[in-house]
Amino acid sequence: MGKYGIGIDIGSTTAKGVLLDNTLKIISDFIMPTGASGSRAVEKIMDEIASSSKLKLKGIPIISTGYGRTRVENAEQSVTEITCHSVGIHSLNPDIRLLIDVGGQDSKVIRIGQDGRPVDFELNDKCSAGTGRFLEVMAGVLGVSIDELGPLALKSLSPATISSTCTVFAESEVVGHIGAGKDPADIAAGVHASMAAKIASLSKRVGTVRPVCITGGVALNPAFRYYISKQLGTELWIPEKPQFTGALGAAVIAIRGLSG
Image: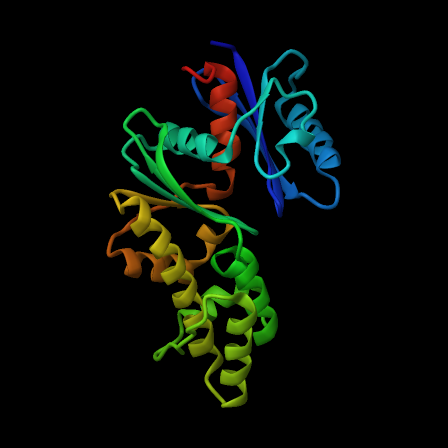
């Protein structure tokens, strides 16, 4: 086991880095927009981790993961997001058996074994309707920021029906509701309920096993948490920093190795 390990998760929307010591204590972490160049994001992450930790990072093993994991040229190995998210969550809460990770461009539901390794999983990577991008589009149509969308939805007393599972058609439904004078809070609630239902269907395919954890940027959205909890019929466990799970798992693997 090494003294330190670095995990870098280059997602489609954000890039994350985590530096751990061999007690799995987080020494430094950093998040930024991925932007047009994953390689530049990697450089920035390494600079920020070096600056905040006051450590020389040369020689510390790096594991990469995420959409742009091949852009981490100095990584010892690239490991799938499924494995890294599972390992990361297991290091934080070994009791978790189902992980729902909702990112900017994809979402995934992972059933986790007692050893922290993935047992089964389902991906939503062909359609944006179950992702953060879906919420961004709908926030734009409603004329609010993405940070305002969740709190707005929680004000609803009668959520609108959004029946389409396609972002384009759902957007048309939202425009129709606006034209009909529907309360924006009810429309926002309908958007979240529709998204939660889509992701819950992925969960049912792998088997909803409690306890359930939500990660990714969308885990910060209170309305999504409310509606997915309602769909699954269970309380949720949310990490303190839900966007860092993949990078955290990669750093654990960097210290312990894939077989650790």
